[in-house]
Length: 270
Image 1 (cartoon, helix red, strand yellow):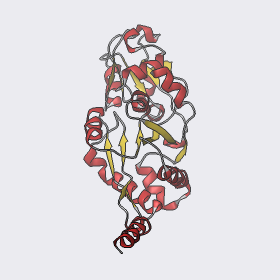
Image 2 (cartoon, helix red, strand yellow):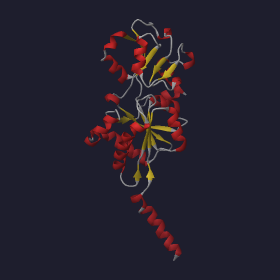
Image 3 (cartoon, helix red, strand yellow):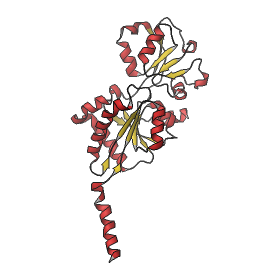
Image 4 (cartoon, helix red, strand yellow):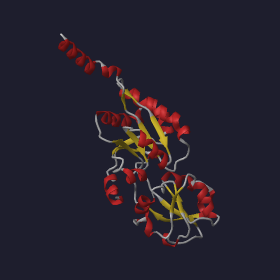
């Protein structure tokens, strides 16, 4: 009798529990250098969590956190184990192995499936990047070793200037125009925004990166069926009217396949 009861309970556990399941599919967004704070961004994280959870259905719970500082993200990951996330290119290349990240999809900020970094100085400044004096700042420079490889094909130690991360690239650009600081690195969206400003006529570009991947949707640790379902959910968001406002808050026009350039870049940055 007892044996039969145990068998029934085991059967019920495998057939009923998914309907009331508590499988966590939490995520984290790590974008070093981007504006705001974890607290400011939490409503957007909650909205993304609600959307993804509604698409994955019963048996899954989703929560999310946002970090724009590497140290805060590291402290969080030391105590928590998110299943997936969206991370900046520099973070992915710098931590893909130690954090065991697998690319699942790509973002499309401004509708573009690639990014370009440009080293910008004052129009009357040096004519080559090798002649730049003073620090070079940028939102993507919080991983200077990775950034040096992507933009200059050098190690950070080989550069005649230091690379430093900034949360305020436009302020730093104005400082460069006033003769304070060496140069600023702008990504595609930042450069396009600056081109529309009066200061654009006072600037020139000394170095341009190759076409680069955008921020990466990743799996943390082993991938599984939920990650496959997530990929389909993300790919379908661009055509879902219910996701339009959420995509705008996430600053992407949708999600595409994982960028094939990531693995070669990861090997080069290792």
